[in-house]
Length: 157
Image (cartoon, rainbow, N blue to C red):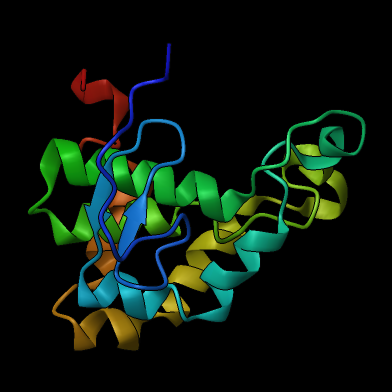
């Protein structure tokens, strides 16, 4: 008995550099917008490929996926649930840009707070967001939970 195959977009990969992203678990394909493709070329987003999602625990387990892969997965969910909301899609991709190399492991030490760092990094991307018609204040409000979105668990989504 052979395992069922999933349709895969012919021009896709798991990190989305070609304009499409295939989720490695579910096989769903997300077509990236020009803004998302531009964000994937920025240092705050690309560096997430070197940040283990599990933080220091990744040194003693087989968990190997990165904060970038996680953020792309969140983007895929948002694209599925509310694909026309460019602000929430940007927030999904940017939500972890403040993480330190060991992710949550260092939270609280010497004042490290990935939310504060992340909002600073998101604001620094304001020009790029603006070029694509997305207001950085709307992205910050989405990340802070003051702008309703599918990312806000209080909505019940």
